[in-house]
Image 1: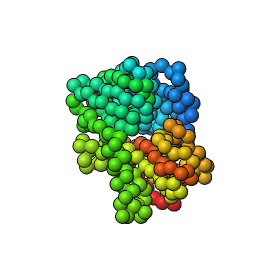
Image 2 (image 1 turned 135 degrees about the vertical axis):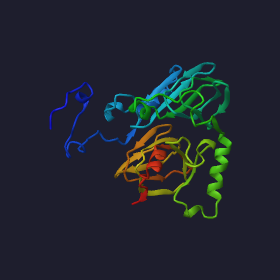
Image 3 (image 1 turned 120 degrees about the vertical axis):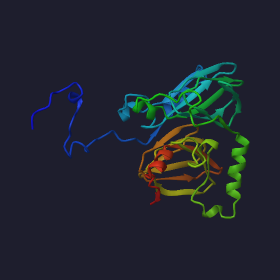
Length: 297
């Protein structure tokens, strides 16, 4: 066949053989505890601002990332001050670790206090004002959009509404789980958070799941695996630990730890109080792709 004239479009094409096309290697997601970042956020001298939980150097990404699809941060706001945020994300999750205040985003105004969870649509400018010294934990899917060179949804186009989960209702729901007659037979005593925008998915954001897990003193969550990455905030867990692929990680107050996809892991409460740990996973995307792969080992 006669050779066709090359164009600037054909010159961009690349062709790989059956080995090179699939022999793609990436740095693994590590099991990691963000101790230094916690110390920075909790430093009494820390100014109002954010502390990213960034593993981009270990992951080899060109953008900040806690995992390839998740970016978590501590956000410190001093009493009487405010923090402006504007994330290139399709949704935002906030957990109030300490303090109280309010968030304004467009026409929405939300008051919050310690233990509350709330979500915002991504791509909106928000102002978080602290009535008392405040520490927020916030999670977005910025890395997913950065990977695709995508922008946040246009104003009003995001599928997610503003949603508020008050601390006292979270506690009531969790207590109800422990009081169920079949509580001992449940695989875990936890609450999964959903909202009116994701009724079918039953997730907090289309691609993210969020759950408040708990362990009674002396209990353990048996070893299991799943393909979703877990990013876990220790809310309350003195005397608790996890075993991830055979390595024990003792829980430390207010730290965040990552559990790699496919890693065998279990959680144990050797303390004398109810343990609570808040877990974000990229589970929504795995449920959508039919790739969650959950199973006990």
